Length: 414
Image: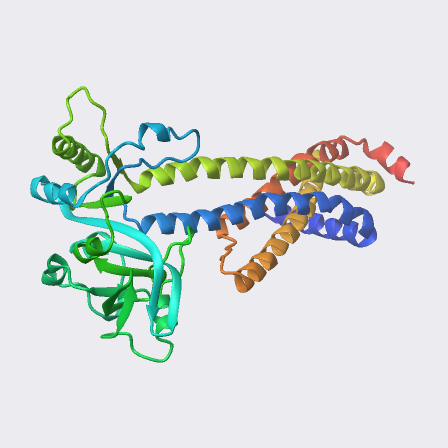
């Protein structure tokens, strides 16, 4: 233990002496490590932050929820749209039949949407998402109300002209008043506001309840012809029921509803969030590879820089090495001394790179809506890679120093 502490101390002193005595040479040599660590860890920092935001957005759709639609979800590659465009849309009748026949679902809801302008007196908001939803929508979709209430069953089934509005809609239409009980104009009709969504901000995909207006679908369909609109039936699984089990049941029910022959292909799609997650997994793998390739070249250059410093250091301290050996220092002592020094130098370059990333993450997080986080895992990765590069770069110089003949070393250094 005493020997190790002595090695660490001497290596630490020699490393800093190398920096102090040869500032320009050392800084230029360490620049490669700094840039390499910056490239690799910055890519992973962005990657991890994006992944966290994306997975949070995907999770908000529900991991135990399936979506019966006309179009299947897909990520990357060619999308054979010509196979799907003639499929029928999901209908309210389909939803009602699923409700009757399903044994594995906890709730079933219908959703259809259109973008229109919403008005209140002289105030208006353009391009607002107007959603027609069925009664059980609150059981399959995550949202909270900051004020007011959800539709009652009688209001939903009776098609009352009522609405829940997002926080941004409420702030723009009613900058100084309470929206509850007021009537706004939606799709050319007066609709009473009964609820306000809690402000939640946009997710990674730009979606937000803050910019939506919810109407009972039975009222919505009196304003818009929903037969040819892109609609979704949302089905939530019961506890302990897997998505695969629910998918199998829904496939059988939908084929029965559509009266498809056994040999006929499905004319509907059953989507789930796992499709999106797997698609982004492939994208993240590519991003990670690019990060390693870009950073790898800089790390390679940095490794040569560390090796150069160590060869020069061995040459400058040849006399000291000879004296140490003459006083009884073993070869492994000399070897470890220079290896520790190489690792220390490399770590210094890596830590500088990490500090630059930390500063940039704070700047980006405080000046934009995107939050960057330098995780503990990425910090440890940066330090570990730096140490490894230093170890590999210092092996040959350290080995050559350990094999020096003490007499020749002292004579050379004189």
